[in-house]
Image 1 (cartoon, rainbow, N blue to C red):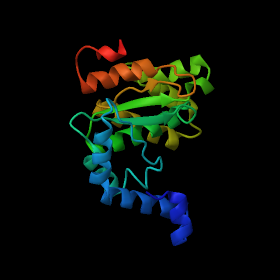
Image 2 (image 1 turned 90 degrees about the horizontal axis):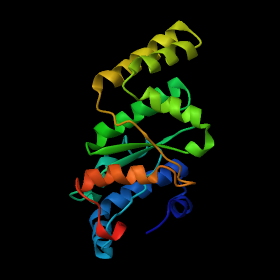
Image 3 (image 1 turned 60 degrees about the horizontal axis):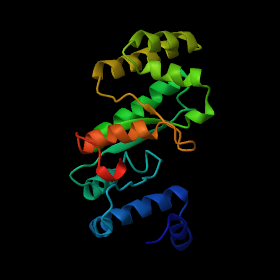
Length: 203
């Protein structure tokens, strides 16, 4: 399997073009890749997809690849950068992208708020409160942080859409660097996969 960097050199492509070419090639060989994964016999398989939404999630080949690689018990983990979601408008934007991905892939989805080690705990707690049941907290934060009325009205309307839909999983705070929150992520994923008691080998 060639890398995106090799495709750039071979076909004289830019970074985005090479990623698109690599994804298309992966989709063609998806069944072969899935067979190789199955042969490993792992209890869990994590597949890291390109983070550029417009190149993966919003192209039809992204859905094709996800469907071909998925098994009976699969889920999407949508990673939100905590530093991008620390403002009310940044949080709304991140959750709208999470919602778009959920609709595009039509699979169980878990949202995680990564890089919480880069923020003060009070900021992380505030972000989590915006996704809680008290929807007025996000509305008030949006109104107080916008520079003009038009921007405030748009932000509030977008947040109202998120609230009205009501199917967006609240993000789980984690740190890939320190490992904080990964146990909570495991429990949620375990509930998606199994819905019962834990595996013996993890006890």
